[in-house]
Image 1 (tube, helix red, strand yellow):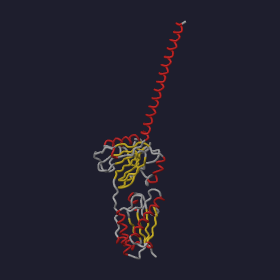
Image 2 (tube, one colour):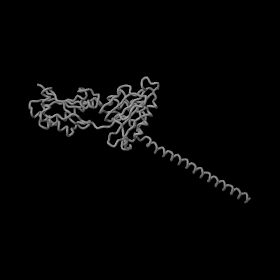
Image 3 (cartoon, rainbow, N blue to C red):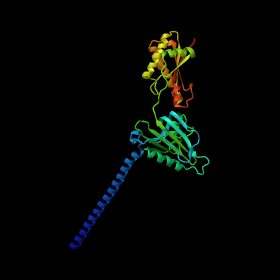
Image 4 (cartoon, one colour):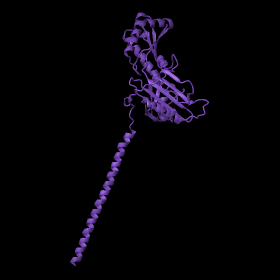
Amino acid sequence: MIRPFKSLLTLACFCFVLASTSCQNASKEDQKAKDTAQSTEAEQKTEIPQAEASQPFDINTIPVSTHPLEAFPFFSLPKGLVEQNKPVQRSYDKLFFAINGVMTPLEGKVWKSYIVTKPGSTEEWSQPYFEKSYDDAITKVGGVKIFDGEITKAEYERYHNQASYLGEDGSIGYDGENIKVYVIHRADGGDIYIQLSGNSASGKLNILQKEAFKQTITLLKADQIQSQLAEKGKAVLYINFDVDKATLKPEGQEAVQEIEKVLKSDKGLKISIEGHTDDTGNADHNKKLSEDRVKTVLKELIAAGTDQSRLKAVGYGAQKPLVPNDSEENRAKNRRVELVKINE
């Protein structure tokens, strides 16, 4: 009886060891599966932010091109293609480029046009030919493609009211439109931005070389202000304020000092100080900005000793342009302060 009992005991021990080993193996497999899942999840979590991160464009990350270039606009048209109409060309303007999917305003010398197949040609329009021609030409002189895609409808809604010329020949920047953007980084700061867009019938090409605005309007002196008030009943001044603010720049302070001289030399003179802006941006904001700016001038004149009863301040925003807001040069003319003589 002892021997069978021992056999049963041995068998039971063996089964226990086998079960324990199986459980341990199962636990190891389960833990391995959990570790794998956690590892995969961790990898996904580190990859998602990288994919979603949108780094701001930095021109300094683009290699400088020293390749010699022809005169602006630098590139000829591909063989067999022509401008549909006379190209739009301005010595200074603001143009929006799709950079990282955001329509970004750049300023400088501008050229843009619709591009089509030469009339009478036996060749049909080829979008790949148009795009490949410029891709090769631009990259051969050190240009880099920085965007290739579409802007969203929300982005179009955000910016399009700021783009004064959207709709004229060669305009690029509509939602659902594939846009390719290149930049040629130049050591002298005259970076060249090129964007193009094409479809089954034609192409559009924009070229801008960055260039700082050159002010051609000079400060009116006191005697010139007096002369304009006497002859025309008003004087047009270009008083410099900080961008989108009502605070005076140093040269703006100088302009106010010239107004002070006029008021001190003619104690009976009363003036209305009237502020004007261009039509860029929100109309209500522009009107408020123009009001705040002329109030700043008024306060400066009162602080300098002019009686408040001789002064009036009103802001019109973009309601009374001197010239059409159809170029950056004209918009600069419309950003002004007028001194209007009050006759009583």
